[in-house]
Structures are given as structure tokens and as C-alpha cells.
Image 1 (cartoon, rainbow, N blue to C red):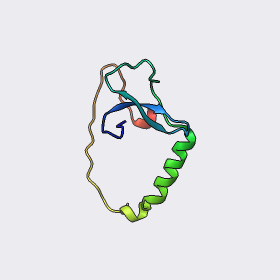
Image 2: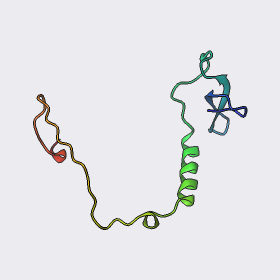
Image 3: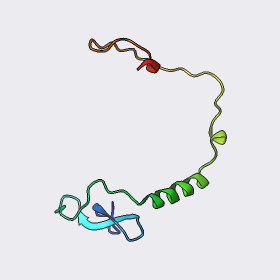
Image 4: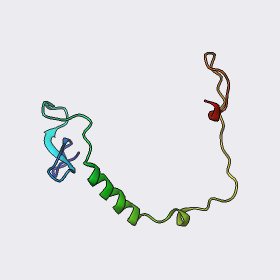
Length: 88
């Protein structure tokens, strides 16, 4: 995360469950940094709810009718029998 001065720092969980700058610059000592840190689930639910309210509905973004061109790549492995996705 970037702190207020623009320095990239390791994240720390605040008392409200959100992630904030720990004040420890990336590359410096990591002794007090918790790996794989995530915000609290309640914070994530709130962020998703706010995002859903601000994004336009899918039907206003694009039409799902018509045709499209797609690239299909077929690969054969010597140690795996041929099959379709539903069979795997």
C-alpha cells in the first residue's frame, strides 16, 4: 500500500478491519508483517455492495445476442487421454 507520502509500505489491519499502511517501507524489516493479510469479511461485503450500486447493470453494458469469433486451441498430451471438458 502507498502511505500518504507516496511510499510503498506493507499493509496492516486497522481496528475497523480495513487494510492500511503499516508505515514499514517495502524492502525493510518484515518481522511484524502478517503474510497474506486480507480485510475483514464485513469490510469486503461493504465494498462489494458499494461497487454493485455504482456499476451499471449488465444489460446496459452490452448485448448478448449475435455471433462472435473465437480461437480454439487443441492440445494433445502423451500422458492424458483425449476428452471433452465435461468428461474431465
